[in-house]
Image (cartoon, rainbow, N blue to C red; front, side, top):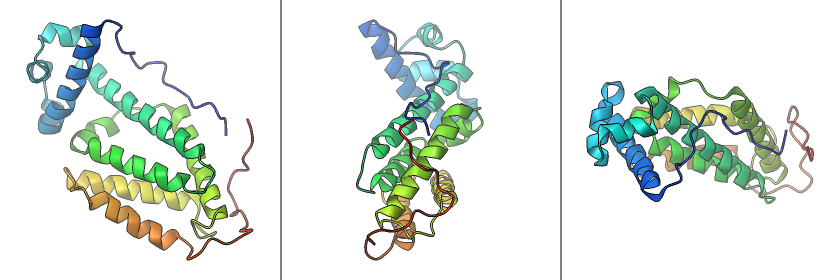
Length: 210
């Protein structure tokens, strides 16, 4: 896989002025709350009121509610890529677990309006890069004895989808809902003790410097 993670070319960047940056973050925080409460029925006027700014200020930052939701999605995607890069930087075999916990926290943070994000189109290149990163992290975890050699990247993807579904179904999950779910599944995927010289499971990509 490429060591250079793709970044969306469509995501807006933070405005430069201090007051504009402040309003940008106020609007995003308010949007998360209002979208969580009202879903697709949320209005830009409601978001502006919650943020304590005029609706014109909201439209200066985001031309439409769709643009605002797209920004929230791209922020979440960038955070996922950052988490994957941090996990890949580890050399002790614990990167996969670190990444899965970061994903669980992200799912929980967006749980109340996750359905709106899942309706949007995502960056195919970013999705492929994340999938390759999961394959590499799985291989490393297996080689370090953190997973059974028979566990595949597809198994890990199934766990991720199940964890996301659990969080969405819970709506506002308690602090231990997804961590306990993840702990139970990781326990089942782990070997009892690290095994020196474990063979790389079949089907995993070979790591390269490229």
